[in-house]
Amino acid sequence: MTERRDDGEPPERATADGGAEAQPPKDSGQRGRRYVIRGGAVMSMDPNVGNFAVADVLVEGSKIVDIRPRIHAAGAGVIDARGRIVLPGFVDTHHHLFETAERAFLANGLLLDDHSGSPSAHPNYGEHILRGFARHYRPADVYVNSLFAGLSQLDTGVTTVLDVSQIHHSPEHTDAAIQALVDTGRRSAFGFFEGDGRATARYPQDAYRLKDQWFSSDDQLVSMVMGGELHLGRQVYTRAWAIARELGLRIAARSVGSWGMRPIFDDLARGDAGVDVGPDNLFIHMTGMSDQTWRRLRDAGAQVSLAFPIEMTMRHGTPPILTMQRLGMEPSLSSDVETTMAADPFTQMRSAMIMQRMTVNQLILDQGDLVPPNNWPTPAPGTPELLTVRDVLRYATVNGAKHLGLDGKTGTLTPGKEADIVLLDATALNVAPLNSVPGAVVSLMDRTNVETVIVAGKVRKWKGQLLDADLPRLRRELESSRDHLFAAMGLAQDLFAWS
Image (cartoon, rainbow, N blue to C red; front, side):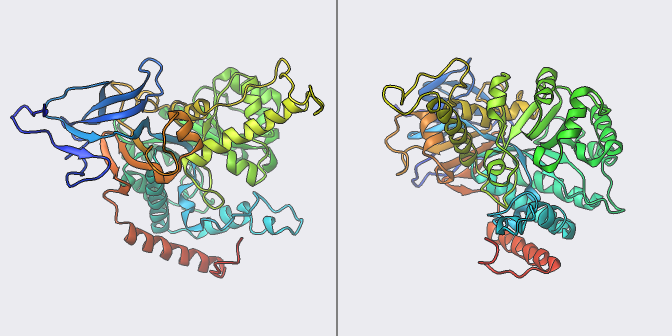
């Protein structure tokens, strides 16, 4: 029997797999507008909601109303999700959006020049990005780079990001970065970090203006996080942390032993740094840090974001996942820089799982002698547990939302939360036949499987195409920005020179 609307007409129907009526629900995300995501394999990431081989998700306005099989909602639009996996949107807790024009420029690059003469040391991140390209950004460059990166990640199913924005040379640069996040139309935490120290810079004191002008309401997609980098010196970071706590902002800071940051973090752990660690702190990387620092952060309830592919590639140090497991901590995941690696969640999840399992598997093999029957030894007590696909999915959704203080809004499919939802095509050549939902997402899928993306109830990607974005125009503007930046750096645009 055909479902009827309250006015006697059939409900509008939007099918995920094509057809003449394959349009997104009208006015999605608007107050009072309802639609049902029908018939998908739902993995809620909320143990109180559970998982369903086949179920429906009812969305009204910006929020999830119900999740269960066979929802009847008269008058609601319908998205046909048969053959699709329905998940909460992915969360990236550390991405430098402004660097998009330099994509793949450092495909072989290290953080710093190690003075070896290696091609991997030149160009490098410190010299050529932070002290190079970044100095030549105009506000217009900040805007188009950040907008393009945001739309690109939205296309991969990342519905929430922390933009670690280190491009605040002036209030105009800052406003351009925020406007780009607003115009992207996804959930974002704007990270107000430092600029290059020129006279027009207003970090950290401009936080007061930003809070009043851009972030006066908690009921909006874009929120604010304060950058509190300890390597900037005590006078700067103590002021930044104090302002953040006065304004009720979370504080994010990078912690990279190979960048020489270990001594100041040891001071922090001993209570000698002039600031106190708390649950409002998010530390990024945490490579090469002492056991004392780790224990201090854990006991204070601080959070840690790991960028597995970048940390392994650019010589930050080994991602400290085993230390976190030993201490009973869990990370969130982050993409870091597109100068060196893709910023999609599938790369992050697989890298985390592969690195950890490689390390632990070798630890276990080393407990034997490779001679039968000891070639497959039973793991000794205290050996870390192998990560599973469910673990890294939790890192990429639940943990990310929690670490940004947004777990009351997103990170799980839970009635009452915002409808940040992705539909992943499980009928595609690289996935079918579907035998395991979490296994398929982590071990098989890539950005081509991201078919529909919803942020706060609004459909932003539909049938594989981003909506409300003039991508050809934006690409031309990004290419123009790249041309300006390379010219300002005095670098030739040679497609074969930089990797």
